Image (cartoon, rainbow, N blue to C red; front, side, top):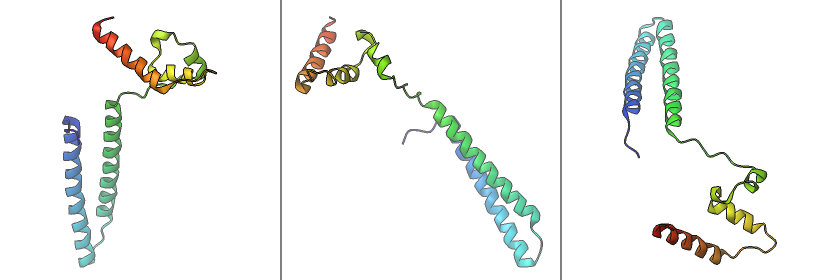
Length: 124
């Protein structure tokens, strides 16, 4: 698991605080039940804590999602066909060759990718 950042640590601390408050409210509710008192305020407080915990979870999930890079946009077949060669990746070339009437040789394709990598490493 990745090391937590400051925001995650703060969310965890707030979660612990809300958990402690929930335990206290539950104890007060049990006390009210044992002694025959009403506990409407405690029940409302328990509902508020539950809502706060839900809000905290949603906020932290939004934060985590904002830290992820956006997913690449999938191009349509027409957009892929219109791409210039220098903007195509190996998968685009494979897809194009695989739909060709001549087919594609997987071993040859891999050998070609390795040759491209060697030439780039030499600066060509």
